[in-house]
Length: 379
Image (cartoon, rainbow, N blue to C red; front, side):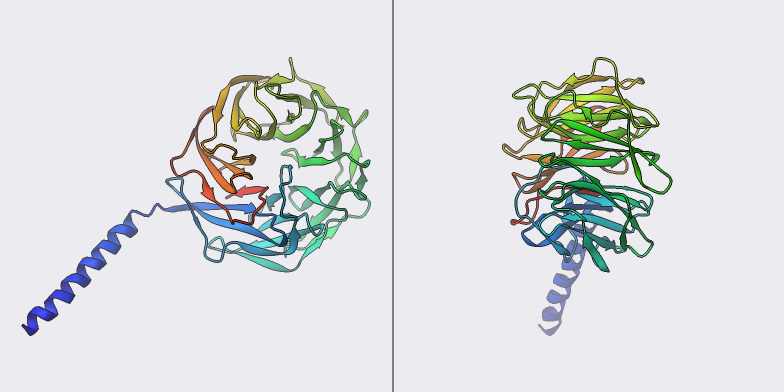
């Protein structure tokens, strides 16, 4: 009987170990990380996830990670509220509630840590978008009283330093929604959502800006919003036009000269037959463009011709009604498109096959309940 009593627990222990081992074997490998600016009221946080090979997300231990700034706790329409430094060591986040920018260090397993004295004034009010090229950073401030584009440098230790003489003041009510560099860092553009204007600048070797002749340029539709340069051609720019009304959204295509002058491409703007196309993402090979239609609950898909014209392929609906999809970002391998869903407080995921999208069965993944998310980084 004594041997039997010993044998039973031993057998159960072996069976348990075997089961645990089998379960672990079915956990999909971690292939990278995903981060979302939660824009939480009071202390702002960044939600952090492991990305698995099967497209699932699991929260990184300790997530969400606090910045040293504050969010607003309410939805903000902008693109680029969270960016990664080119060397992959840091995240830069807007703290719109405290008019600050926070730099967080990315640790080896994806956890985040604050950089000492890494949170600084945005040199304006309500920062909403960040552009970064090498060590040069520009921020779009959208709040009343100090709306502008303003520059910083990012040193190897993760500290931002204001760039003297870099601030470009904007008229009251401009509501910039995006600021971004082209791939070579020689051009910087910004979209003024409310007044339907596009700013375009040539970037000097010292990081300061010179406005293009004739800038700002009239947008080709009301509410220019998300913008993206073509990864394979830094002279081609795409801008969504979000406020045309029901079923009247479009995406514009521009050629950008060395001095920043914008010239319309082909028959631009290109209709997407949806409502409120806001956020724009271009495939890494430059062949396809995706724009998130926030009001329609869909993502429009375009093919990009060699000359930069767009051909509408169709639109893919989001699974969750009222998801309120915001920013979108492709994974580094280009095989998954991730979206921030402000209405659902979640992250959506779509498999990418050329210009086709299919929402993954694991999508969406919840974000913190108090999040008002905008801005996403995928590593």
